[in-house]
Amino acid sequence: MKHFLSINDIEHLQQAVHEAIALKKAPYQFDTLGKQKTICLLFFNNSLRTRLSTQKAAMNLGMRVMVMNFGDEGWQLEFEDGIIMDQHKAEHIKEAAQVVSQYCDIVAVRAFAELKDKQEDEAERVLRGFAKYASIPVVNMESSTAHPLQALADAITIEEHQLVERPKVVLSWAPHPKALPHAVANSFVKMMKQHQAEFVVTHPPGYDLNPEITEGCKIVYDQEEALENANFVYVKNWSSYANYGKVLQLDTSWTMTQAKLGNAQFMHCLPVRRNMVVEDAILDSKKSLVTEQANNRTFAAQLVLKRILEAF
Ligand code: CP
Image (cartoon, rainbow, N blue to C red; front, side, top):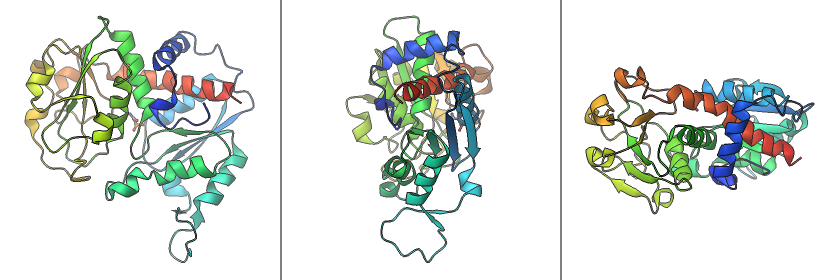
């Protein structure tokens, strides 16, 4: 694996999940693999889990870690080719990516969707800019359209907690006061397409994800019907894709409750808004896997970094 930009960059996902679970059991078994190798984590947006878990994963492999909050502290980047840079953007992605490549061996990038212009977000200028101009492997720590490290951690969590061979997994939209990107939901859908499961996506009309991503998936607009006999319920808000980046409604009848969850196990990538997305009683119960998902972020990142280091 050269770059890790999408969950589909992992060949044989199930094998990777088992390898990550083995790393979790013995996290320091490859602690010299990254000796004298440096990873640079560039954040254009906020983070708690991604920042700390990716750093921990790299340290478990013996790597050195540099972190930069690029959004606040870096020069504003220009992405257009051939442009006269006479406005506020001080540095071109071509130089920035090549310069970062001099200081480290792997660069990981977080750059969210702005949710203003679908075409611009789907162009993934920051992530693809680094992948194009850096001379080192690039890792996606959540881009405009994808959060593959989260999806890998979610696959690990499902594998660890599934009690039947082919569980029913439901991805349910939930209300949220702010417009949120589609990245987590997109990568979860892509991951679930490779997992042996009955998979259902449920959301109100108007919240359909990119149809190219959900192609072949069962979509149910009635949440109660979708949740019937579910083993795992993954709750996430996203803004409208068709009416790009808009919050169409705040229908709290879609908030996840204990009654609706039934016997299923609850999943969410975090951060989560209590009693808006999901009620306290679920998060404070044993049915909630959210802390375990966050823990598995370390081993998802460790698996990805290990594979990249092994390919050097
Ligand atoms: N789930 C996740 O990516 O968390 P952070 O945004 O805190 O990194």
